[in-house]
Image (tube, rainbow, N blue to C red; front, side, top):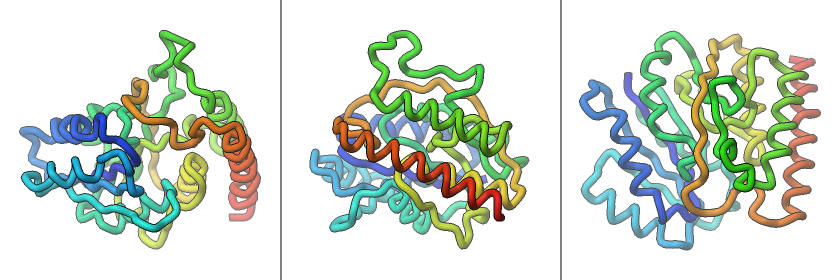
Length: 246
């Protein structure tokens, strides 16, 4: 079993090297090949320069910069998927909200499942704001309600429709492109996997507070918050129609 880990980045200079080193620890003394593919949306904080310096002595790390293109998480992931060379693909947030230590957990399940999703909403999971509600970001309420609605309208056995932390067999993504704006791309993906009757398992994890940087979903703008909420509503309607007629 070999793994390709995709990290979509944007201004992650403050922690990206620590993240890479933490990912690599999962493979220490393991008979598994791995690569880390970083797809950067043209960071302006020195992230690119820092990674370029690092990868000169680390051949398992590859960096691709999407210059002159509109920043889009789904498109960054599609680009990364195209560049992968191993049969199992993992993608995760690059801000430490998705702790890298859970990568090793996928080793136990990937032979028996087509996709492993780490969910924030299982009973054994924890959220970064559980101990201090003041750290709860603005976009969390709409994310929580969105996932509850999706659980009600789509699949009772799935809880996190905007997870973004997944391990999936590469062959299951053949002829499929991720599409959508941030979180809702994941809903479309889950419907695609369910329509193909693929074996999916959700696992709990302890979500952490982001190390540095701002939320890529909201970015501090009230107008953008409204825009994101509108996209979520549209995404539910669109994917419900797809589910009903597929």
